[in-house]
Image (tube, rainbow, N blue to C red; front, side, top):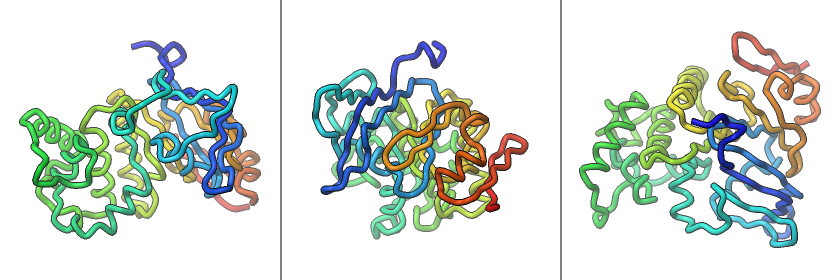
Amino acid sequence: MPSPSAAPLLFDFRDLDVYRGDRRILQAFNLQVRRGEHVALFGPNGCGKSTLIKTLTRELYPVDRPGLRFQVLGRDDWDVYELRRLLGIVTLDLLHQLSHEVVLRTVTGRELVLSGHFGSVGLWPHQRVTPAQERRAREVLGFLDIAHLADRPISEMSAGEQRRAVIGRALVHDPAALILDEPTNSLDPGAVREFRLLLRKLIRAGKTLVLVTHHVSDLVPEIERVILLRSGRVVADGPPARIVTSSALSCLFGTRLQVVHRAGRFSLVAR
């Protein structure tokens, strides 16, 4: 496997302006991420993280202009369904849907994972599951340590268990990268700890991870690059030890903060 510095580009974005309505959210935005990298995109609410995710999934598009580069896996044009399968994106919108969808009272863990093959949330009568897809779903459930939840309705799972099942849905078709949007939102401290262990397991299994978050506790030791976002721009980019500092995060969040880095874990305290 090539080193990340020699690997193909996963994303190659240059000079992106992205609007939501009449408001420009991403401004002259530049980002390159290579396959095999483990990256965290970090910033406060309103910095453009959710807009970037929606741009990746082609729900939003940058303004077309000279100098624009908007490539994923070396290509400019994608079938949206194919692209979403290749990227394995778990969004806040999907997590909210999971919390409110009435049909999920009867959707089991197995069905949710299998539905990743069809781009749905849960299975529908017209969708035919093959034996190979069933085997893959069992493998994913086992890898995520939720095989015992295969027949349990999503509505009867804890928030942490639901989060693992949703990641299983993204993993079932073996995407080129896994992109997690604010994955620990609403989890209690115990579930956050378990989720950190899962992130580390995913990375050790060779899965490219792009983590979008505003929680420094999400930065597991295997994250080798942190990109700070503010007002729709990249304001810092580099290894965590250099980027995740008290002065940088105080400036980023507009309040006095102290970064504590101990035993491979970051935390924040107000000063």
